[in-house]
View 1: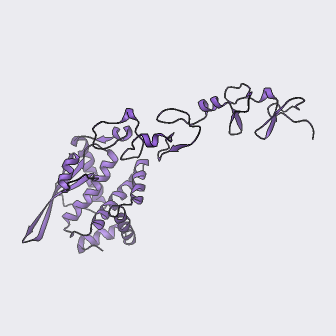
View 2: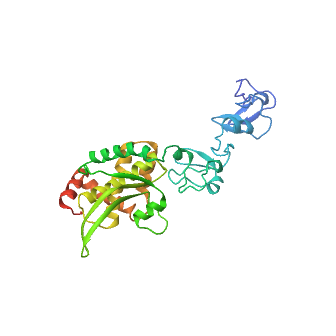
View 3: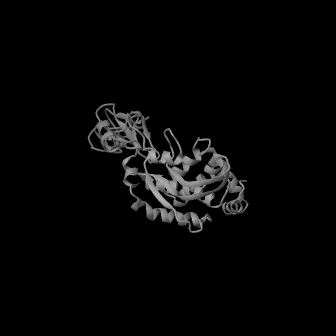
Length: 301
């Protein structure tokens, strides 16, 4: 069969040799690709066809946990955003309510009404002064979709969860992030009309979440302004979710795609299944035609 050939130097090997990585080597030529020193025992880590000392591989090549910095040499997790982390952190750290990123102890907020990572906290809308320009832009965007409010003046309020529960007439914990503020008038038990005064949104939402919630609530505003009769919750909420979904898709960012994909998979019978049913109906008709028919007929199809 002839003498073995060293992969490193290309010369025949007359004496002792190593067999590794489907090749033969002079022992002194089997070098770590990182530190260039010989690998003298059987423990090494291959990467792209080259050998590494285990310590060198951990230091130079291996991914490192974004939370504790340890090299990821075994099983590990990767989130939607491409962040790799140790498996044990998944149960030890809470996940952000908005993006799913884990929140290590040093980034956790005490007493906060929502669980936010530092990425979402960095864009949070905390004041009405920050919110108003966005609110105006969102009204214009919704108007460009064919939903107009006849120049109805709309107020915007950033509120706590307790205040939001008050507006929603809910007693227990709420998962809602926004509410449409309206007053209904009735006579002898018969509904006469409803008037909208504005929109309330939970304070401290990340900017994109704030925007998608406002667009959803502006869908409710339009239904009231147009005098569309109340319908099953899945129809109304599904319609408003479709509007919000269209906005997120129009943004076409990693964050907007994440939220849009979550809407597509939402298991909730009203906000999830209702969204998918209304989306299917609207896609068959076309959005502009659906809006036009609903505006003129005042009937849900």
